[in-house]
Image 1 (tube, rainbow, N blue to C red):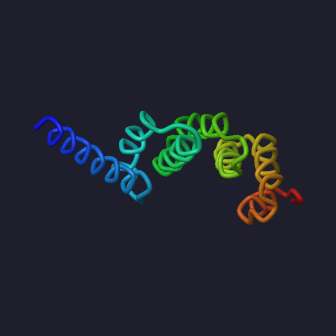
Image 2: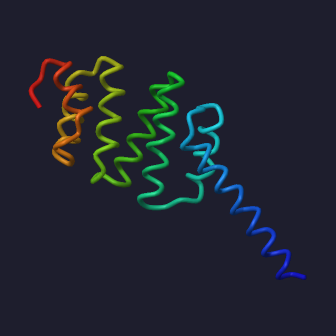
Amino acid sequence: LLVACALAAASTASAQSQRDIDLCWGPNPDEGIPACTRLIAVYTGVNLARTYGTRGHLLNLKGDLEGALRDFNEAIRIDPSAGDGWYNRGVIYRKKGLRDLAIADFRRALRINPNDTDAIKNLEALGERP
């Protein structure tokens, strides 16, 4: 009986985790942000960094630039080798009018991924050469 209860609990937890994954990476910030928050509580390493990045994107969609900036900073701290964190933080800096910081982050994203067309476009929009 204990084994059956443990398996049922694990199955329910697994189903909730899959639902949280689907919501976190889905298009709806109102559902995605809490789901990402639940995943952040259990993830580590690269998955944790990606989940912070995803929640940061959803916070940005809701207009919470400070929250998005905190999450992108955390994603970069956890995995500085991922260009997405640098690019996304650059977007927030650009929205906040912090031109020099945005340029530095777009350039860092390009050092990691020289084919990052979004970083290139943002640099060009800021009057900078990639």
